[in-house]
Amino acid sequence: MNSGKAPSDGQFFYGRDTLQIPELFSSAPVLAPPAVAGIADIAGELWDKLENPVGAPPLREFVREGDHVTLVVSDLTRPASTKEMLPVILEEISHAGEVRILVALGLHRRLEDEELKKLLGWKVANALPVYQHDCHSDGRLIFLGRTRYGTEVSLSRFLLPEDVYRSEVDKDKAAPVKVVVTGTISPHYFYGFSGGRKSILPGCASEKSIKQNHSLILGPEGERLKECRAGHLAGNPCHLDSLEATGMLGDIFCINTIHCGPAGTATVVAGGLNEAHIQGCRYYIENCSAELDSPCDVVLASCGGYPRDINFIQSHKSLEYAFGALKPGGTLILAAECAEGYGSDRFFPWFRFSSLPEFYEALQENYQVYGQTAYSTLWKAKKADILLVSSLKPEEVSQMSMTPVKDLAEAAQFVKGKHGGSFDACIMPFAGDTLIGDDALAV
Image (cartoon, rainbow, N blue to C red; front, side, top):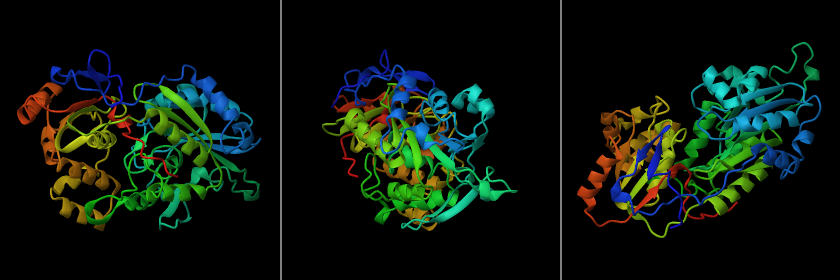
């Protein structure tokens, strides 16, 4: 097991606060991404990457004089260093025509004005037109075709010249629209990795497109396809389907940050959408993945604090990776504040099903994205004791087949009662960023 560092003074990050790790786990080894120093000068690093991209001309050449630019950014659930990067990006494309920002919300909620200013910086938020993607608005979506997987691809009009930049008076003089996506690359429990193509599908796609794409995860007999797992892209239908859909837009310039556990921005990649994304994924596997000799009886995990534990749907990623370090029938303790609840009102109602076969049958008949996340949660909860420290209602945590505990001390008492004084344990202070093993990118 590789050595990492937990927060100072034996604490876990929990929302914007910390929790004290119980003495019971004082000698447990830490399973975390290797210590990678964050970039001291993000702007300087970004300048270099934009001038020397992979698989694309420099950004200032990719965007030609007079081109209109749609700059796609992630919302606050992603630690993408957006505010720090935007001034550099905007200076590099200062010769463009009009520049607009599109927040890739996917199925996430809209941001409030103050949240937009926090995300973009108040100068940018006030200076440029900012649009938030609405996956339900047919008037803001354009159908582009079907992928070979059968996904009906409808994407935001703001990615295409047919939108506001095409004059109703003289449509033949529509300026080209260049798409530049930003975001962050981290492990994703069934997409392999976030970042890159995910900024478009699901980020800027219709709800129907997102549901069809995500439903490709479903395998036989209640198991998801083995190709749909963290760190794996080869043969992964969700990844490949998204990549094909994104290709319908033509060339896209991609700028992604990589965060490694507690570090800030570890590196930046830039260039062609697929080329830059693959480069970033390789960096993560080679520099940020953790090694585990053997599974543990007990895993004590934190998402790593805000925004990774902003809601349960985001926190589930940490639950997934921590579960991968657990022995069958073991005990997993997760500290996830979930200050904004579940993240969608379409998540918790799925726990009207307590039987996995019944749940899976209903999911196959009426696939919903957050139903898949709920099923994955229940599947893990049926195979181990999962103790959750959160702000969620205890009775609802119980309905999800997990055990609510008010703090880590109560969780430690549970462990003593179940495992006695002899058990193997590990601590995962940044479970949401901890990719275990080198699953091989295999692309």
